[in-house]
Image (cartoon, rainbow, N blue to C red; front, side, top):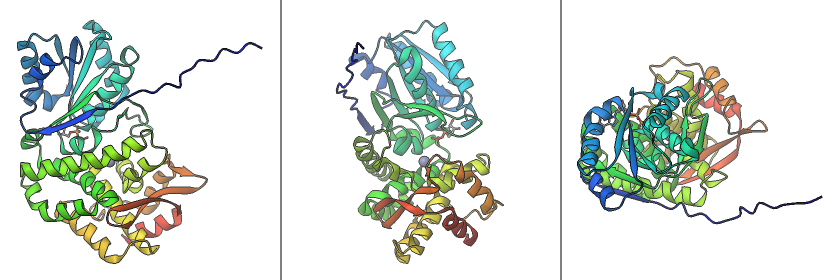
Length: 363
Ligand code: ADP
Ligand code: ZN
């Protein structure tokens, strides 16, 4: 037998920077003129962000004589589909955009995930820049390179890992963001503090009122620390083989609630309820003290996030059914993220469906 080895064991450097400030958006076109990332740009955005910011970015790019196009789709999670991906790709092909194109993902998590996934497969992969416009995308989803679309089967069920070339966070975008989207993003920021940094948790306790009033300095600090925590975890475990799993704190139950309610609840609200259940479970198992559970829940409360599904009628059995479909179940046991103190999370393989059922029944 003849053997030919394909030697692909080479080092790649996908490192990138996250820039955080006010007024970065206004300078983006000039920055790309000075330091081009490609020879043409496709700005992908949704209908809301397109109206407020997309047209302006396109004008700035074209004023700088940069070859650029604006592609927009209807706002909302429903658009995060294979169908929209296909439409965007067809439009890019029709425009004759080749491998020398860079995508600018301008919008919230929906835009980032979808545009990032287009970038991952278009012409077998082209570069993209994340320009997140929601708090959730700034503090969480625009970092880490997880890109995907939803299918009728499950959220984010078809996707890839594709890191952006850079992330440009302009805090000023938050001035036009609806208030409920601020709470949505805060759930992930609080999660980052809970799993990794007790000082940051304390900062959030002290500054939550300012953040809710859109105090840009407090928001900037919260976003920066949130990005650092996520960046550290992703740098250590890009493909979620181990450590990255702690980012799923509150998400096993959270995802199940979202899916059982057919996404009639925001991601942040569902994750907040998930974190409350997880904290209760950790206390019950003797890992976490009651005082910490109360502190966690108080901060969520302050942020306008729920502890319970009080106004939604959901039977624990239905949530459990959804968890059973969760990809994190191995040999009947669940990889479940618990806290042993504020700022310290670990993945437990000791949690059973029965444990979760009891917690849900106590809700
Ligand atoms: P997420 O980032 O939570 O995944 P989406 O991408 O669905 O959320 O965005 C939430 C909603 O907010 C969408 O309707 C989107 O069009 C809108 N949106 C996003 N960014 C802004 C902004 N800066 N100002 C106003 N509306 C925005
Ligand atoms: Zn999340």
